Length: 212
Image 1: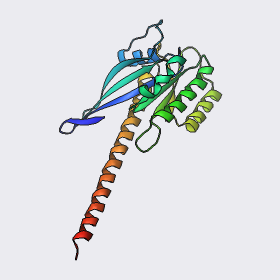
Image 2 (image 1 turned 60 degrees about the vertical axis):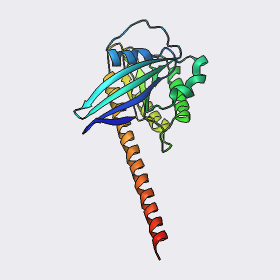
Image 3 (image 1 turned 120 degrees about the vertical axis):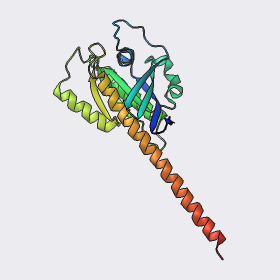
Image 4 (image 1 turned 90 degrees about the vertical axis):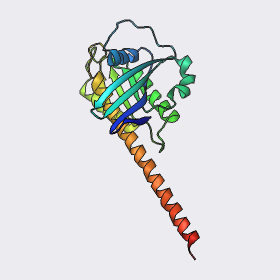
């Protein structure tokens, strides 16, 4: 969603999902990004929690991110279609100390692609987060695997992140917002082109009807 509040000044509101298996650090990531806080012990998210982040993107643009921190419990997965609706982008999080959560992240990405998409049918921008990187170093072979997975599964990119040590949190978010803005602009351009084509077709039809 976007609109002009002042001449030459634009404001955008984007819904961003934060998804992944339970205990991978989704809430810690969001709280570090939004409030620059880290808490060692957090209760698991049940259902969904909401956070707002306001970004002065540049002198002419304000971006509001509505972050949906979605619980990873299996029993609430049936609500995901409702939670995903209207999303503009997503962080898909896994825990580098727990390899099974990477498979879980890929399942979340598949579910995301099935339940929400852009107007042209393409997947919404999604970034893979290899979280808790302060606890273990990702080897070079793993890096190559993650690069390949991003290409195969349609992620726009991936980052090693740590909410505890504040590693790449802002960088990953800026990367996603940049792609959301690009996607939003491309969508608006497509809409303008469609309107222009329709007007041209209507003009041609009217010309034929009025000719003798």
